Image 1 (cartoon, each protein chain N blue to C red):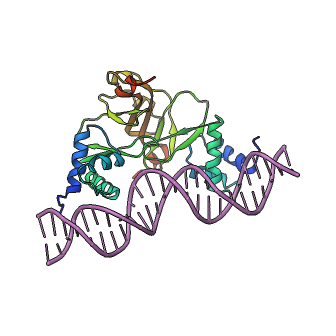
Image 2 (image 1 turned 60 degrees about the vertical axis):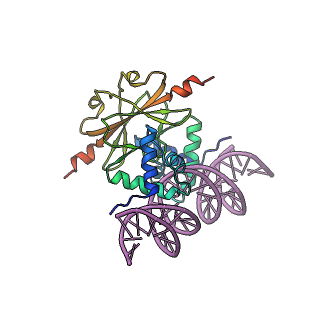
Length: 126
Length: 126
DNA sequence: ATAGATGCAAAGGGTTTGCACTTGA
DNA sequence: TCAAGTGCAAACCCTTTGCATCTAT
């Protein structure tokens, strides 16, 4: 049976509130504002549980720790800001991917990440 | 000054021979056939040096240790076999990426990874 | 009451670093 | 010769796990 704890609520709330994929550290920082003694292990345990229960999906970016976002969204990709490191959700996708697959290979999925500067960092750049 | 050592030659040869992006472990395994006492730290140090000197480029895949491939190739992407874990080079790219970028954001690059089964794994599947 | 959840600290896995020894130029 | 390079082990970072304690139910 799954219990409702202050820690778990704070973690879920952080992810619902933030509006973009969050890393474990980001979740910890935000959830600690509600539950001060919160430990990183609890964050990891809950993220894992929430993924297994289908409430979250992991967002894995090249060379980066995994982020997590709410499940149930349409197929989409992400934008990674090179300045602040935050990840944003994009809409839409690309086509003609199959044309890139070599003969004899079978494609079952794809991942696309755009890089650059997000709105905030773009404004504040020198 | 940069010296020519048996270890470094074996590492470069492994990368030249393999024909696809290699992880540090793959490099170690292949290069050890030439230099038996080779240590993983030496592989990491040389990979890093070869990247800095512009001979290699890192290939970073979501949730995976970095691979390395020879520098100087045209813009391209990669295929990651879900069965054997090997990474293959693809040719071509996609367009209309800019259309996905939110207003106020600036795109400076992108990464695309296709997933599926490579030729060998496709043949041997049940 | 009691099994699930938490916090801490220790353990893991991959990568990097410190240091004494080896070796190429 | 002697600084660059190597191997080993320890250090690191991020993530997971063991265990005693705490707490929803």
